[in-house]
Length: 293
Image (tube, rainbow, N blue to C red; front, top):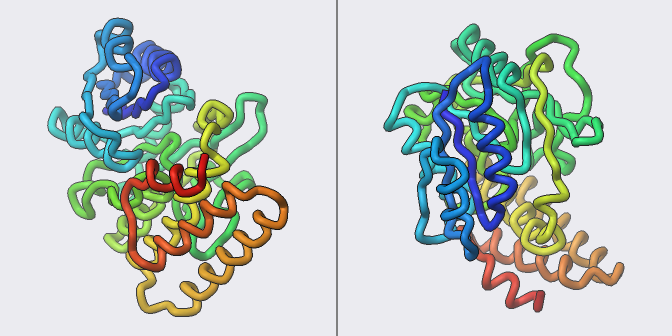
């Protein structure tokens, strides 16, 4: 198994995550850490503290999609083993990782499989996901009845991916930059005959608060904008879906503005404009400058 962990100005989280993975006994993975052009000394600290990892230093912030792709390419170049994408603010034990690997090995049609995802306090965050252009709430919050259940899409917080998925449909679409890129990969994989699944016998936790600094601005922008990229990629001729999300985005921007959340409202408005115009890729600096954050 290959494990890919992305770092951006969060060395403590990344070192904790990498050390936990390195300590797994049920499975002995190769660990690839990608530093996404951190503005601090993250890369140097990770190199000193975790000499066992393959450290990849990106010269620019490529977002989750681009940075993760660097790790995936390096992992596949070393071995054609399944690739586990693991957020640096998530945690999963070796037994859970081994369970996912076994489930993938037992189901040749399965392309991507995730564990149940919990908050640290024990509340269920997600048991897989829903198509982001057919649902506003994209997380499945009900436990599946069977040990392994098919779902529409999964997130990239903790997901094990069969290497054949990448070989057949390609890596993450870097135009997403951040958010929804793994859902897009799921939709492409399903067109190629793969299925996505959740295994309730495996569990992981995610400390969302560690990644919440930009949730009112950049997170909102990419979540809204990237739905339009999903539409372009998979539902290009579905006018009702385009109209629905345009109307929804307008209504959301108005609601946020009336509620005094002007930065969030501006982020949604920019996301709507960019989504309709086809302006994708990383827009961090421009968005933050235009909303005055």
